[in-house]
Length: 269
Length: 269
Image (cartoon, rainbow over the protein chains, first blue to last red):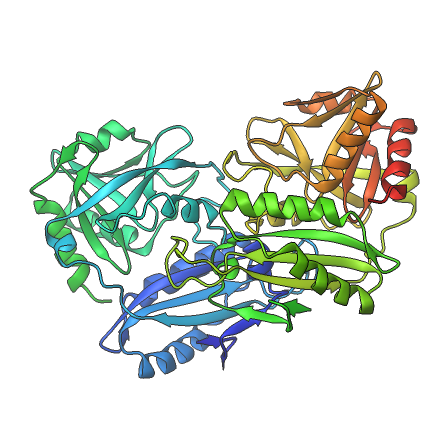
């Protein structure tokens, strides 16, 4: 664990990340001493910092720290948090901001291998995501909606929960982005009012463009998922999980999902 | 500063308060070695913890720590944060939760004395509060909406920003609750879909009941404020500020607001 470049495992209780969730983060995968898709993660980190007016640490500094981490942790989940730093009492951001950042490393989660090939059980969450266009898409530290959603079930065989917005539109998983397929066309929810637009989602979209597969990004009702030919969830740690069951619907074949999974697992930047 | 009962100024970067804003807080006023309205703050802290399923520290423990703080800080702003504690990676709360808590102390903010008597300038914020009934009313650590709202202006003569919800209803200030008066009747926004229900708001409501003054809690448009006979903002640190100007509206007399201000400043529990 490192905080602001030093080996440390704690942060000031006056850090605005702690006080207000005033920061952003990345959850990334290290394999064989390398971080998967660092350029995409860095770009998204910079975008998210910009959206909140937080000074993102210099990429050169982050790379030096990351390389040092990878020397001792060649595989695992690497988390990077950037906050607005310290700022006294009060919500208003200080005029002169010095951001703080922290790295942490976790072992790879031990998900059943079957989830990659045979798909997962997906459940519908009760909590609905609120609409906040100013924060939508950003992977910020205000994650209580995700916490409440993930607290809704304990059954270990349910891999993920599906979140709708206040209007009942499909949005995402509690920690993943959603895609579905209908008649060879790819669909994924619009994330301009809520949700987190992840790096794997971007990679799937880029893959589709490169293959000439059309993608529709929009507001879709729950029925669109139930009627889909395939559905799958993606994030940087799990890669891709096809959906095997949701409510009373079962899927046994996911040719496009598995093709995309192969691409996501194989391609390096 | 104290963390989990020990003198400390930092918290683990694995604390869920830092990772997800998974916690709640209180901002309180110490005067002459005493904490104003501790029973109300404790009750609200316990309510907010319960709403998020966080184990609130034992009141006896909190009181011991508070008394110790007050010995060295007889006046100032005292902040208490309670988080769900440490919980590995992932949004789902751990089955066995051990909450963390932190105390911090700040000097009294130096607001112009005129704001109490002659009232404040209030401005309208651009950002609109999103509707999340599961989090509404709770003083939790997901405060990015407040941060973005407070970042909207720098002019020192503007004391507070007014927040509407996505439907344009009056909700609150960036760090205070709103009341307004019309024909001797008191009005304050409903906070069941967004906003923070503060302890001073509760005290004003209790005062009104004790005086037989009727209060309407509901959804009110911006025009209701502009047409009000008086308006005022309350929180535990500022007490009460009458509103002197908002947009093109000016108020010069606030008899009811000043009467309530006197009650809020004087009454002790």
